[in-house]
Amino acid sequence: MYERMLEKNIKPTMDEIFSIIGDEGTKHWRIVDEFFNSSYDIESEIRFPFGNNYGWGVRYI
Image (cartoon, rainbow, N blue to C red; front, side, top):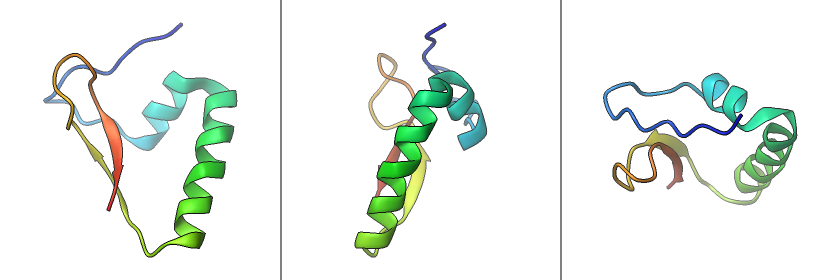
């Protein structure tokens, strides 16, 4: 079942994010993440950047 992680004080791990997005979402996430990491000098971080309506996300810098 779809669920957003909206609690700002509880930072999720990538494993928790993967459990929410499921196997198919995780598969696609890993493809995109691998592309970013192999193509660019980039780092990712889990952040709560978009406010209470959107929850946690991963930012690439």
